[in-house]
Amino acid sequence: MLDENLIATLEQSLRQTRNAQNRLMSKLREAESEVASLRLEISALENSAVQTEKAIDSLLVATRSGSNGLGRTFRIEEDDATLDYTPSHRPGQVAYISGGRHIPSITHGAEAVTNRFGDRTITQACTLLLREANGPLHVNELYNLLIAGGMKFKGNNPTISIAVSLNRNRRFRKVDPGTFDLVMREAIQAAS
View (tube, rainbow, N blue to C red):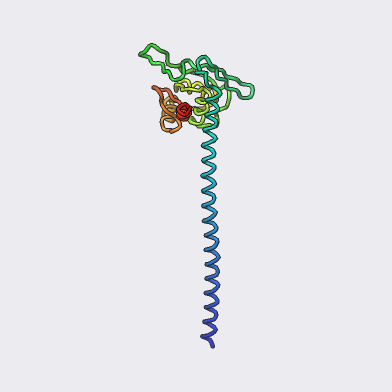
């Protein structure tokens, strides 16, 4: 009799263990299914973000087509502060010392006019500036605009920091020495 009770108790314990195992396996399958669903949603959102970025770039190019940027003044506004900036060369042209042309100078001792770029990375801020410029900008011009927009640099050579950051990022291309543009702009211009 003792053996039958012990066997019945062990069989009941085994059934409970198997039931608990089956419940956990079912939960695991549901979780794996949810993970796969979330990965698909993330992928769809990434595709949407890429398409939206392309649309923004297309609209910016379309609204500024016909303007080569020469003589155009870019305005940085935030709250009550305003900075007007006019590029010193045509987009796509580089100023060479040996060629007698002018390299944009760095404004030493300049102070921030706004805090537009205070919480952005170099690449984020340069993306915005190059979109607004509708053409390539020299690192010195980018530096002047970043400082005016409130960006703080920690190193001794901020223009080198800008150039290295842009060189390392696939979003940018070097069009001439010290001069960068958005890769997206080239693709949009090639498509139109």
